[in-house]
Length: 483
View 1 (cartoon, rainbow, N blue to C red):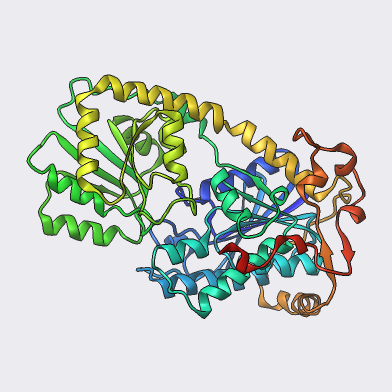
View 2: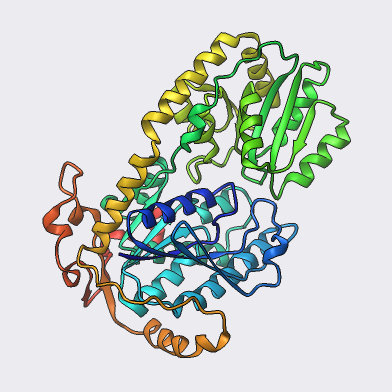
């Protein structure tokens, strides 16, 4: 099967969406599928393009049998709401032009954000007559509104309409957690159309030893990963201020992100000697720092509940680190921490509660050790890499249908503007066609027990993906039903 992946984040970015987008593509390639990834330039979470990729419009490379076609995009040094919009739209436009001249795939797999890639997928789906799967790693419009990054108005209403357009025309929608799935269903999408493609554990994390202080004098409280708006990391700086007289507790923030400058400035103004900032680390050094941490933090703003699930939760539990989660009590993160018994939950934005939780685990090392063991067992049960990726591969194969065309030569990825012209004409004529398509949904692919329905999955492509006189998702409702 030939698969086109559309997504802004990919290797060598090491945090956020990129490792999982890369892992999905490379796993599919290892299963014998032909995978082309149309992705952006490396930039995250530092918001800086490496020197080797600067002044590049298009760039081709290959890794683990995946053909990678990179497209230029604007990357701001200090991202704001407006600059983020320009950043994402620059990639959406350049990647659409690049993808449009590729050979026709059997399936398009889109990773959102950016949300506007849903429009690209719809256009390419019309151009080629193939289905697309829309993978939601972040409920972007909800996040932007809930975090106050965008005000309600015409632009936000446009985002929600674009979101519904992307959902309505997708053959399948996938997301990371049950809570995110329920959020999507609440917008009027049929339950059987929304699947779970969770993230997974890096197997090397299971080899990290459980937390043991031994003779170390300092008690290390660590946060790893993105330092952005959603994380609300100001609470860590404020908790460190309350602990400033205790020189045995050190708060260590490792990573990068849009809010790092403000956090460092805040710590400097408070003259805190118990806070360390470290940049994004090479993998071996990251594992060493993770192993040396006595307690790890997951923080979110109060309004961030079911719109995103940070992958660091999976990492920390697999590494047997006890967790203090400064998150909303009703969030998916809180549910996982409760169910796994892997840590303590405190109110978001409450530095005193965070400090008290740190002191509790420092005073009770046996409790911290027990939490670490429990978290690892939970991670092994729920996020095993082979199980998660094998299930995804089977589902994608069923969505595309089993009558895959015989292999042909794949067009080289275009590096010249001249290559766009004929494809652009073809794309324009198909985009504005009145023809509508119906797509398969999970109830037609799986039987009642969740196994693949061989009869349905084995149907000819013309039956799984066929023209119809009307919209394919009349039962998905309208935008207003979300409220």
